[in-house]
Image (cartoon, rainbow, N blue to C red; front, side):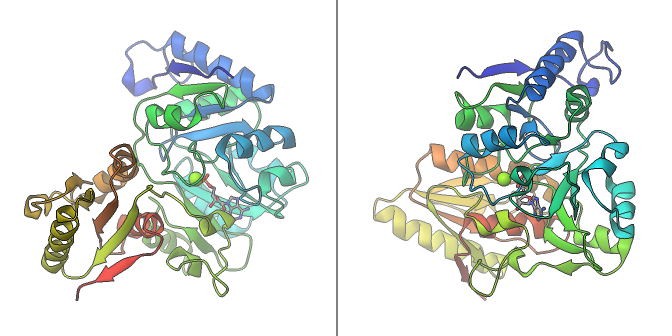
Amino acid sequence: MDTKLVSVRGAERTQEDAGCIGVQAETEAALQEAARILRSGGLVAFPTETVYGLGANGLEEAAAKKIYAAKGRPSDNPLIVHISAMEELEPLVTEIPDAGRRLAELFWPGPLTLVFPKSSQVPYGTTGGLETVAVRMPAEDLARRLIALAKVPVAAPSANRSGRPSPTTAWHVWQDMNGRIDMILDGGPVGIGVESTIVDVSGKIPVLLRPGAITLEMLEQAVGHVELDPAIFQAPGENVRPKAPGMKYRHYAPRAEMTLVEGELEKVTQAINQLAEKYTAEGRRVGIICTEETQHFYTKGIVRCMGSRSREETIAHNLFAVLREFDDLEVDCIYSESLPCEQLGYAIMNRLQKAAGYRKISVE
Ligand code: AMP
Ligand code: MG
């Protein structure tokens, strides 16, 4: 299959207002074409504010199946259904519990996915056989415009091959999906860089299934106590069964063996330096993931800075690109610094731990 790559630009990136959300005429034409592909059962990758999504008609079982095939994704890992306006939620669910309504009102459009009891309209092929459906209204204008034009809810997981880090640029999508999907809309690098927060609002108390840019602190301020799915920070096993089925799979993973180093920052940098020195001497290629504040301490290995500790959004933004770059550089092992597990740091640490397969060294 030939994959068409088309550049699209959002309202704030252009002077000429042609369409109803203020996109250029070429962008509007590309979105129309992409919408036609979605309606006729094809696959289109598109930018959202979190990561690039791989979209298909969420109400059509056969279209959802194509997503699993293109990604090489296990079919029990459900897809998030994307909508462009609030009134599109009701047909997808049997009930909108109060906490769900409040969170949607506060954080939609935005990087928050809510899990509701599903209606019969949503096929099991989209929900991985579950009785619930995950729904999100993205903040990215181009994504909402595409969904509105498609006139169907758009099932879209991250547009990477299963097990690879999520794509934050159209180039990442191209690397993973060229020849496997119909079209890629290139809207430039995404804003946030980690996937949406997922909250299950189908039970009495909301449960955080995956941390993201809508932080636990923000959620609790809105709806009171929020429970944490134990799978967020533990390796899946007999006692830990994640409620978000996708959380149990090897995820976000670079090809090299990655280890997180935790503890007091100065000791962490010393430990990483010693490891880098030892393995470099043995002829191995060592990758180091660090921050602006610590970058200058490292003397050996291939050093990549994720961003600044005082601006964690820069770290979220660069994280997956750094992991992908280490794949391209074919490093043998990666050592990464850790961050405090608060606010956005919670989401970043969740992705780093998964990338490391929960391998860690503590240097207290
Ligand atoms: P991705 O879009 O690639 O970030 O993956 C979607 C994530 O949402 C996976 O971790 C899924 O397991 C999770 N998810 C989707 N639908 C549901 C659902 N109905 N219940 C719980 N988790 C879900
Ligand atoms: Mg994913």
